Amino acid sequence: MSSTMEQYEQRTGGEFATAIDLAHLSRQTLGDRTLEREVLELFRRQARILLFRFEAVTCPSERAQIAHTLKGSARGVGAGRVAYAADELERAANAGEPTGKALAEVAESVAEATSAIELRFGFDR
Image (cartoon, rainbow, N blue to C red; front, side, top):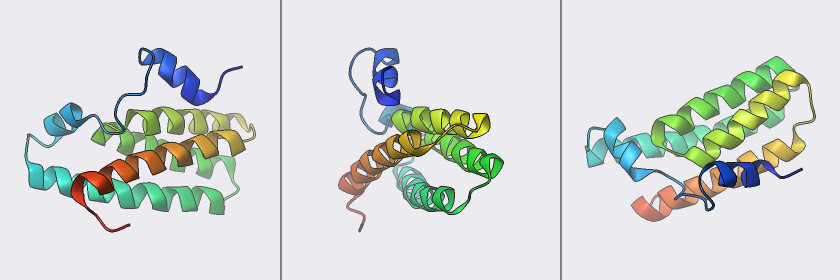
């Protein structure tokens, strides 16, 4: 069985797109670079907080809700890999399946996206 990221790669045509789809983000922010920066900073902070919250709770429905929130945020900013991984994490949590592998893939994709954001805007880590 292939990993979640391999499945995402297959769906997106062979290689991961950039961590953040800047065209999507520009449409969402109406081309306002200041708003783009603010939205990405909020996403960067929220993604990290949600990862910590996910690890802190044990209730499957709470874990699924946290993953769902991350998925929506990621879709909003164009972080496709994060959204895809969070969707898999949400599915596993809802099904009562082990979430370790899915969580690791979410964490990897969040790290990739937050690093891209930090590099683009020079945010402090």
